[in-house]
Image 1 (cartoon, helix red, strand yellow):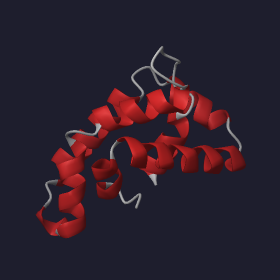
Image 2 (tube, one colour):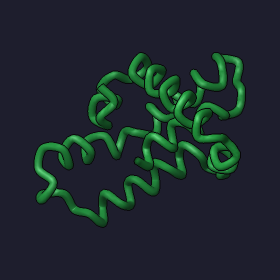
Image 3 (tube, helix red, strand yellow):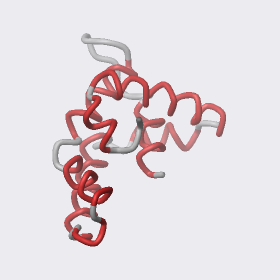
Image 4 (tube, one colour):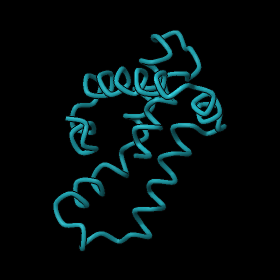
Amino acid sequence: MKIKLLLASMTLALVSCAGTPEEEAAKRFCDCSEDITPMMKQMKEDPASIDLQAYKKAMDDFTTCVDPDGEMKKKEDAMTNEEKIAHGEKMQNLVKATCPDVAKAMGME
């Protein structure tokens, strides 16, 4: 799923003073999910009621917010499948800890 791959790629985010690259990537993921989270909840509850064009735009905006320069995607593409799986699991755990409501809405429970 696109979100799991995005989570894996976020592990390679730039380091800031506030924490590890993984922690910063999880924070950015949570911060960028404000618009997409309600739509994901709606998609789970009543898929027929969602405006698919609005959902696609929100998902594109989310992806751009999380990885504005495309560097995480490039690094993700260079990972082996095993690395992607390991980083994806680590990122899911960090997102669950950082923003449990978002994690739940995105099916990470």
